[in-house]
Amino acid sequence: MSDSTSALQLVLTGDPTLMAIVWLSLVVSGSAVVLSAVIGIPLGALIALTRFPGRETVIVILNALMGLPPVVVGLLVYLLLSRSGLLGPLGLLFTPQAMVVAQTVLVTPIIAALTRQTVEDLWAEYREELAAMNVGPARRIVTLIWDARFSLVTTLLAGFGRAAAEVGAIIIVGGNIDGFTRTMTTTIALETSKGDLPLALGLGMVLISIVVVVNALAWGARRAGERYAG
Image 1 (tube, helix red, strand yellow):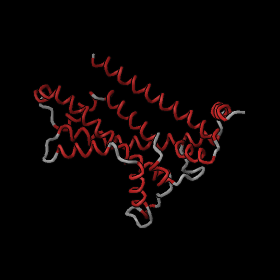
Image 2: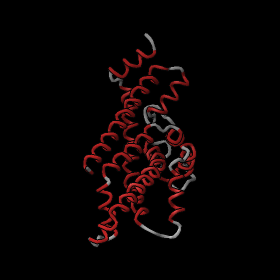
Image 3: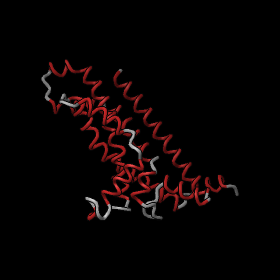
Image 4: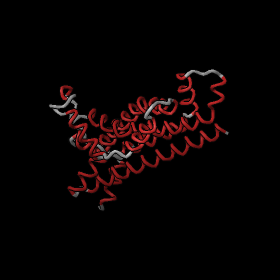
């Protein structure tokens, strides 16, 4: 039986090992995106609607953080969570929670930067209308976030795609422990290096399927936003 056939069989039969790895990956990436949304969406909207000294510098830094090298993030989070680190007493290193932290650090700048651009564009369009209605700063943020909800769904899906495909940071802080912190990307890297291709190929098929679904949802969200605006 060829490696590709064996891989397809693992996927179609719902191999327990493969499904456990997929489930952990989805939980870790999903949790990271939720935390990033809670932090990034209000932060991006606040920067978009607030004028303060050094604002342009903050925007440049935020945009630059979108390209953070995952291995550097992994190293910084490792130092933070290690026994001698600031959060060492929490004992989070080499746990799924540590991987969530690392992915949150990676995804938050992406969500915040894209939210800032989206809300700023809407603010330029509706500024006079909102000013005429005497809408306060807090209500402006809420109103514009709600109006941008379809675009923000696309932003969140982009963040999820980034998190789900990440390997460098989570392998450093998670340790790639079998049955505990082994995700799709870290398993693919490990199994390929071991020459165990069926499991690696099977997880690759699932990962590609997830990427396709995420992109389809993002496209659907954009289309829904266009219909709503029209």
